[in-house]
Length: 355
Image 1 (cartoon, rainbow, N blue to C red):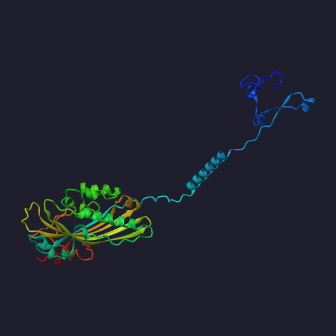
Image 2 (image 1 turned 90 degrees about the horizontal axis):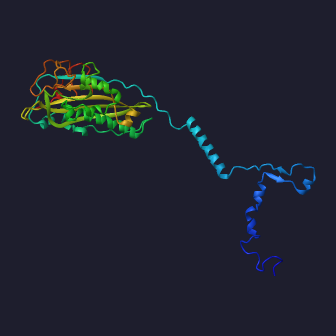
Image 3 (image 1 turned 90 degrees about the vertical axis):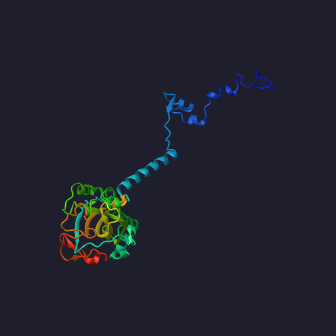
């Protein structure tokens, strides 16, 4: 039975006087602890205290775990960045050395008698020292490459391959040989040599610097044309490190061309023309990365030519049955391993086909 003033079933839910009526003003223990003001106790109020409340010292709260981890990560990242900025593992790129201008020497070789010729280029080749030469780019094989102290195998191969590509474009491309194009050669050169290259073709000069026939092989289109595009080639490529930032490739090749008079209908006799090219290439790391080359020296022996004619801009071959107007010193054989030293030489009889 309920107490006085209470319904028999207790206080109805939601009716005034129930627990829910005061739930919104009841404070839990954490709220009370966090209060900044605290009322004095009854005992304390009995003493001589003027104010009824006192201020509580604020609670000291530490950083949360997540905030602590974040601060730690930021500190580690900052310290790593500072360390890498002071002592990074990558060496600074060395300043590029100035590119040397090309040095050119062209030695015309004059025949002692008439230039031999025949209607069949294959017969000429078969009876010449070029009988065993390979055809085209096959005559410029790459040697077995070996890494050096400062360059990897792949870098050495890149240097050799780029030098070979230069030889192919400057000695075997028909459009280059006939004087129609120079761009296939130009695009391989280091950009710092392009001014010298361009000046050599716009203002050719026999000054050892601006000689087009030192950069590439090309015949006077008014004088001769190819009788056979199967050019015979033989020679070697070698690579060596000159310093920690430079590779050097030396090329020594003999090219043999079958030529006829310009405008020939194919009935004119063909003759052989021989060009020996000794080229020195230089590669720094930027050249290797971009597959470009510095051509720093070009030594050329070519014949049969007349020493009386200028071979600076174009080679002007003596063709079948022709003779030189003037000769030179002792005979020079472009197939031999020695180098000529004269400004004009006599083409040795052993260098001509026996027909």
